[in-house]
Length: 127
Image (cartoon, rainbow, N blue to C red):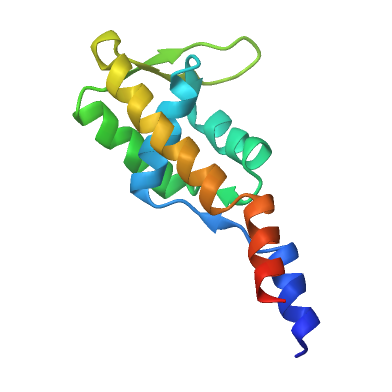
């Protein structure tokens, strides 16, 4: 191993998997923009926040928690050309404000703690 290997690791780090707490905030941040479904939530995090990943298990645990807390509701939607219906989720109207607050926590965390700019600044500080 060389120091360049270490720098390379931080230039191209492995993905960070969300915990349930982060997943709840992330899900609310997406649902604040409109309805969504499980597969889309996983795909969006990979495109919008390439540093992060969301496992099916953690995602569905977060969705179940949010439904039990009555923060979101889910319904089945038949999609043309698709065999089975898709489970869609949306924020309940009385939860909009709290959802925005939790979504802001996700956004602040994702941009401050693990942005590529932040990692580059940390690397320069070490040199």
